[in-house]
Amino acid sequence: MKTKTCTTLLGLLALCFIAVPADVMAFGFGVAGSIGAGDLEISTNSVWEGGTTTTQYDQDRRSIGLIYDTNVGKDALFNYRLGISYQKMKADSSASKYDLDGVAFENDFGFGIIRNETLRFWAGPEVKVEFLEGTESSMGYQYHESLLGVGIGPVVGVNFHLGNDLSLLVKGGYLFQSDVRLFSDWDERYGFLNIGVIFRLGGDKAGPVREN
Image (tube, rainbow, N blue to C red; front, side, top):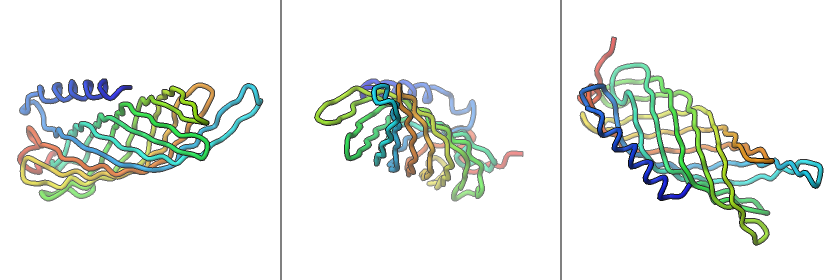
């Protein structure tokens, strides 16, 4: 997916979120970016050679995008956070390298462990779905690649409240991801750190509010 397409998608989603009246429900809306690193293992089924070859890659990732959270500062147990971001992934081995980008949807299901007027510390699972495309470079040649990936893993986060309107977000996690590609299996393992800011709106705006 081209950068322009991703930017257009994120812009439209931003307009949709902004159009929601703040008094309809409590929520937070903001921006975040992340860095990550890990391993990629590709097992290729060769029709001509009659076997499977496995190649190990080192990968690193970058992302930037929008976030929506149902509970940033309220004194309630559960929060759902949706992140929609532009993703950039590079992977290298001794034989080839990949340069891919696209869009990802990150779904966090958080449970507040510490909840007070200063911060919210939460933990839970993340489910991620992404579509990436780009190029593979090998032996002086370039090939177009595209893949659909689904990942799951544990995440922890802290929302530091900077007054009644704004919070600083820090989230870290480790994902186990499988990607769909013709004639090969992709398995990824990577950790990441995500940092952002979010505006607290509606009933989430005036600080922690206890829910029965």
